[in-house]
Length: 55
Figure (cartoon, rainbow, N blue to C red):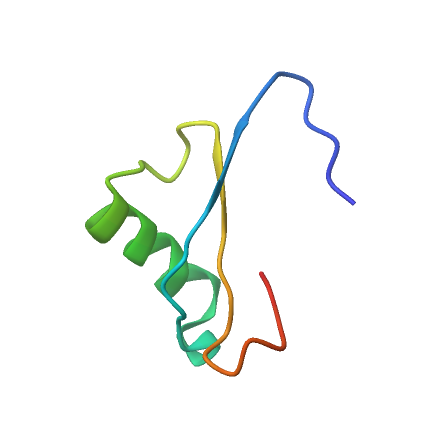
C-alpha cells in the first residue's frame, strides 16, 4: 500500500492498455496521451485489455 503524505489526484484511465509495456511504458503513456508529468502528484490507474487486472 502507498500512503502519500500530501493530497494527490487519482485518475482512472478508461482505455484498456497492454501491461507488457511495464511501469516505464505506462508512465510514458500517461505523459504522452493524458498530459500528466511523471512526478506531478497524479496517480493514474490503468486496466488491462482483458479487464482482469488494474495497475
